[in-house]
Image 1 (cartoon, protein in one colour):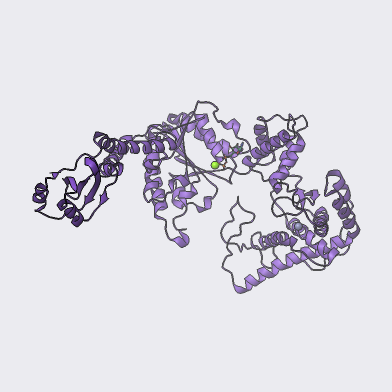
Image 2: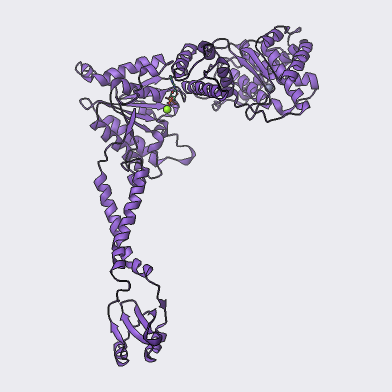
Length: 627
Ligand code: ADP
Ligand code: MG
Ligand code: ZN
């Protein structure tokens, strides 16, 4: 696929502007250049000039409107210094000059001859042309993205049929979206079939999904399959500092597209322009964005039935923030969900991307897919590349399974920081902490199987980590599992309490996550018997960016608010008790595993399963009664 710029229809207007600019500069050049190029004459007071004339020291005088230029007699008849003075309205001057026999004229004498005046006329336009050329070159040809083209649309056009064409075969894991878009391809290929029967072809299709799931890729695939031009522009490119620029870009884009119909306009990051108009927030309205949005609405209403087939595809990961006017019938009336891929989808995506690298015989894509829940298409593409880089770095000819394993950890936990050293005490604390997580994790359901414990620091935050991976894709979790997850999160801190009797700062992230989870159980999932199946969180939680982002709480009474706090606290404390009693009952095992971890720094695989297989359930029931 290649990027081509559209011929620029208003080039002539542009040149007109430039000529205006040129003539302006040109005038300036004529005024200043001669003075700049010649040796600068020294200014003298008028009285001195008269005095010098009277003393017979002056050889030549040139009287101009605003300036008198005069030359002194040099020694032995050689030409002397050139001076200037500001004229005074003095009718006696010619008489005086004549009486002294001084040559004088009314026009300024040509100081440096024809060359200077030629320079004066030619250089300024040359400079201007050079500047123009510079911006044109920077704008990537056609001057479209240069400073001089402020109002033009910045759309890139992908013309199909050239080099690597993207098709639906390049996209995997988003089958529902593909099915919907196949229909769009049909519209573009044979619009007649639909219009003949009286059906209205949809104008706008909104691709909704988290970043990196292949929305842009899908839009390109639609263009590729249909064999039509593809205008691509990002919403943020519409929004400029200058009021009115965005809307003129929109107008321009649609104008160009209509000429190329049937075609696709793809607007990425639609939320940049399409944000709800009443969510102006603290800053009040945003005139520029509103104008741009209005123009977009106008254009979408503009091409009616019978018009050329232009289908607008747009992508966003924040559909809830879009202005409702955009979602009305006749505009983006179709929404296609592009979600993160499931297990089979991930395997298919890995399959696509690993075609580009040389895989070793031991590579099992299915196993990799199992270990990467939550990864979007872009993450998986990145993972394959990361694994290939690792293999190359280790001078191997093919990518092995272990490269993938390490690449996953890299992507998940950040790069290994071997340089960070913990002192012996810290290392011991971290070791007990991580083993605490692992033992509690082994006995509770909900957060997956413990795969690896490590006290090798990674990334910025973690000093050590316990890696838990789900054995299958899970979409729903029940209350017991969530409580287990909270207990596991508190396992690290609980181990520190039991062994050292004190707590370090290392558990803050665990506590944060545990508390968040408990709060969501009460306020979002309605899992509290006291508060009932009510959602205390306002609005609908974004279904994609879901986990951490907490919505504002619904307006609740003081009592309810206190009840929520009490419930959250009870859940967390209950889980803490559960973790403590579990660890107390496995005190010896805690010591054994920690000792081994301190020695090897990492325990994983069969060794770890064997060790954790010895974990005994808590002897006594947790003290706190769970509500
Ligand atoms: P989005 O626009 O949703 O943020 P992109 O389409 O830009 O995501 O995806 C970035 C890259 O990730 C793509 O170019 C492709 O290499 C890879 N990718 C993402 N999703 C998929 C998918 N479903 N199938 C194959 N590759 C994908
Ligand atoms: Mg994109
Ligand atoms: Zn921890």
